[in-house]
Image 1 (cartoon, one colour):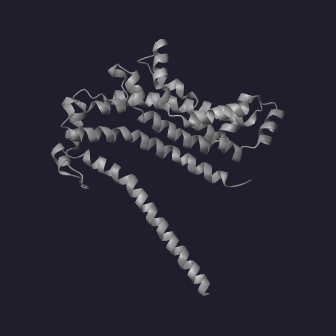
Image 2: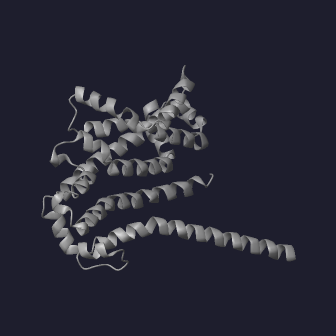
Image 3: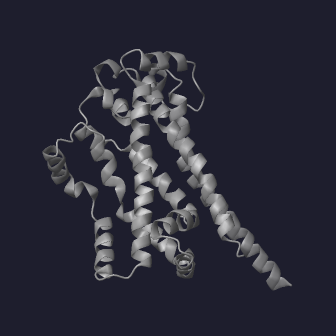
Length: 283
């Protein structure tokens, strides 16, 4: 009985430590966003006085300061959404197709190809950016959305994640059974494999969408026409001379730019949770 009480006290203490760590991590993630939202409602003078946890009354003034000086917020929304949506679709679909090919088929050089994918994943993307810019310039694709969408058609990290997920959940016998029934390879991939991969695809879709939406450097280098600016580029433009004192407007612009990310995450996380729950039940 004493040993059981000691073990129970140990579990309670351990659980308390876990809760404390989770609360700290949650605070580190939530507090900066909350402060940003609060600053979006405060005036520049109030922001300069220091951090506050109480909302201000300058939200409409900041919105007018944000939209009345050439900040094309809806155009930026459309541009960012166009790039992020197509980039995410291409990344998830074709990366899953690549992972499926590497996982299912046996062909000469398979191990070499997989090693090359792992090496590419470890290399920083900025390493080849100068060559990428020169290549796009020779193709006359500068100031165009194509270099922002097409290169994401297959991402090494996404391929690795989906392939590892396939190894743990996708049965090759299921693929063979579909082939015996006369299904083609494309049909097998679209109607059988993709539904099985829903949790993994949802997780990677979140990462791909957030990365594309927040991407500032690549559009900043490639895009020169102001009507084609993405939302992060427009937010960066707020640091110009006419906005240097309107910190409330700057915070409001940043707050507006993260709303689609929060909505997309809230929508896709539902599929992740349902997929994990259904995958934990064996039929």
